[in-house]
Image 1: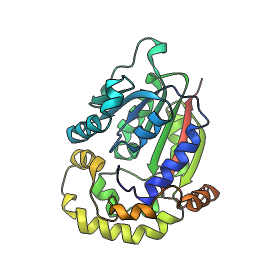
Image 2: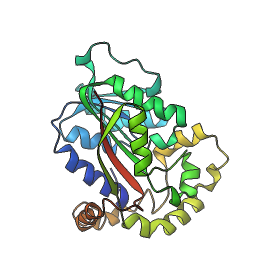
Image 3: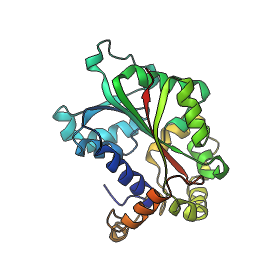
Image 4: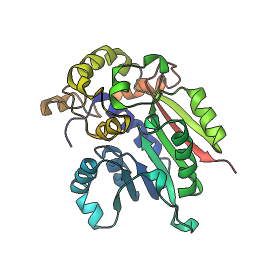
Length: 260
C-alpha cells in the first residue's frame, strides 16, 4: 500500500508487538477498511475472515488479498457481523475477534450486541481486541463526519466489558502525544476536505469511513515514505508506550476475554 498516516503506523506497531505474544490461529475482523490490520494478521501467520458493510470496501479488499483468498487463508464477507450466526461447534469458532475504529459507530444497543456477538464467535479462552477513539473531551469535526456515536475512556470500556460478560485484560492509550499535537491541523484538513459529508445519515457516514481521502491526513505523497515509516517512527512508538496511561490519548487499545 501507499504511505500510511503516522497515527495509523503507531497503532499498527503496537498491535504487532501484542500479536507476537499470541500463537497464530483463526481471526474474525469487523470493519477492515483498507486492510492494513488484516495484512498484519496474515503476515503474523493468522487465517480468518473479515466483515464489512461497504460494497466498495469489499471490492478493494478482494483485489488486494486475491492470493490469500485463493489459498483459503482469508474470506471476505459482505454484511453485518451483528446479524451473523455463530458456528454451533466450538472447534469452528475463532481464536480472535478484532476491530479497529468500529465500535464508536454503534448505538448503545448495537454496542452491547457487538460484545455479545463477539463472545458467541469465539472459542473458550478466545480474545477480543479493539481499537477505539478516546478522550471524549476531544470530540470534534472528524467524529461528526465519520458518524461516531461516542469517544471512549477507560472507565466506559471497563463498564461495557463488565455488563456484557467480558474481563478487561489489557488497555493502553496510543498515539500520544503526536496525535494531540497534530489535532488542530487534522481538524482543519478534515473540515476542508469532508465537510460535505455532514448532512449524510449515520449509516452512510459509517460506510464511507472505511475509504476516506483527505490529503496529508489519510493520504500522503509517496516521497514522504522516507519519513513516514516504522523505522523513523520508532522513537515515537517508544514514547507512546511510555505514555500508555495518559488520559488525553486519542486512541485506546484494549484486550478482553470472556468471563467464566
